[in-house]
Image (tube, rainbow, N blue to C red; front, side):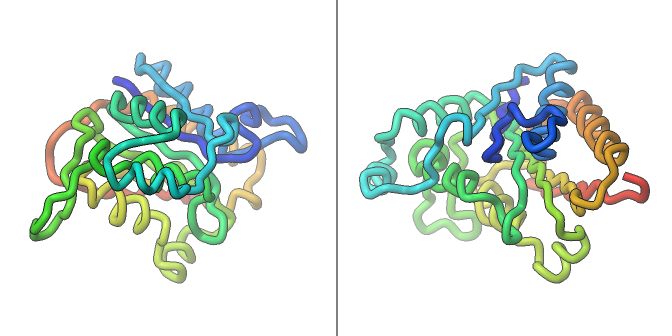
Length: 227
């Protein structure tokens, strides 16, 4: 199975190692997912948005092309090619102001081009889009935040999955959507963080291809006592 992991953190994947002032738990989570999936024999393709210098801004030229089902940015075209080849898509990012960082939102805006990854269904009742990514069997979101999980769900009403799942991939028609949330990370001990990373590696080592069935959204908060 081909897994595409999209990492959004200014420190890049190079910050996965636990080096003071150059470390990112988000990058460490992404690296753990890569290790697990690779150990299971999956082919893993990593898009490191910060390392690529990806711009999240939809330019006038981008929008004109988007409306015509075309692309003018070679970087975006490359991302689309890799997305269309993926069997499973993974996003890894920190949560800032209760949502994803700008580069992840820009990935949605610029890479998910009408006529390339989805098609409109004029007059459709219900889901307005048709999925043009036939290989993509699921999407997993790995989010890292300081907000307590319960507060994020009940006070902030979970904007993250509303945007990524209900408002984007669910609307397109991608099935099997999973959210794994690492909350309160600033207060975790090194041992607790290590256990979270080990758990992530095991999860991705057990990742299996998924096809068919009804569209589902599953939440895995990783907020068990002692983590």
